[in-house]
Length: 470
Image 1 (cartoon, one colour):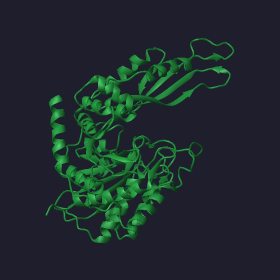
Image 2 (cartoon, one colour):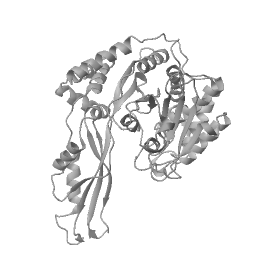
Image 3 (cartoon, rainbow, N blue to C red):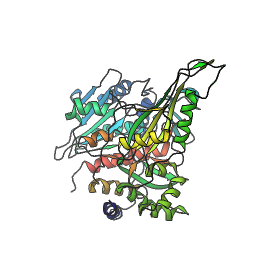
Image 4 (cartoon, one colour):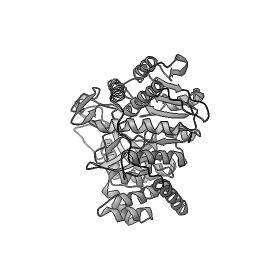
């Protein structure tokens, strides 16, 4: 494995640093194109497409109306899904057919958001202090809006690519399950999304204190396991408490979980990532980042403590996300349970994670149950043409900012594609403050300039990947 790490890092260095290009590109599209992207973005955000309570079909309807107005025919547009409210869209822009299609993927469902938790209405698109606020502004309706706006612009220009360009806007990425759009399309309409490779979320630009650090290209990801910690008890009257209390058993198990950390380690992708970060970062952490790439456990401890993102890159993580307990204010609880969400390194097995959790719980009154099926897939191969295109455009738009392949700490729909033989890469060109990432949290937002720069970046990237070298 160590030899593979060095090979991956050396290949990365050669591809990234030999592909530098002159810094002369524009950083945003013309005003009319920006306005179109803005208007689609606003419409998408203002649809409450929460995974549990919302619907994606209204977002699909908005996109279809935009596409038909731009001249796309019914024959090139597909809509459908596992159930009526969980709609998906697939639209094809025809090229010469000289090469296999490219798939541009984005999900249009969002994590639930409650008005009382936010300082603004999460389903109103609000511009304030240089940011766009709203649920999905970062995850993932910005990319969905840009894919549609740019596709419309290609058609307006009469662009003739050497491959078909397919855009798929899909349902239920945030929770998976039977209505997941990518899984459903692969099982029922694979021909619609068959492609040489796909571009998706999962990689974005990192910045800190206003300085751009790297433009990340996601080539692998963790996978998700959800567990239920459950305690059942005979209960009783609250006037006669006993130590055998379901809530106390559960609380003890969760307290032990909060103190537990899975082992720190690197794989070929993350070792190469930390090696690149050591060349970019400044300050006392710089040396430790380089040592992480060499396998130093002491350095891993320091780096993990310095950043939640780096900690999650270096280990499997499990965290309690939901609680339920008790049935009456004046009764001892008969049930207490917690949902524990795990983001698992590709090399860690479900059996290993479950065994570790049972050991951490250390209480025979607390059952540990895997809640659902899981899906995982290996890393996508590092394509020289893709890495060069990303690196060239990054250098043109943001001089001195390197492109760095990463393993994303979360999970995306790309795993479904990779498992079925379609390589998938996370790349967006939206730069975000790595110290203030608000995906899934309160007051989610996207920088106004970051959005339009991402629009330009993705416009140019898809064009370069869809035209043969002359």
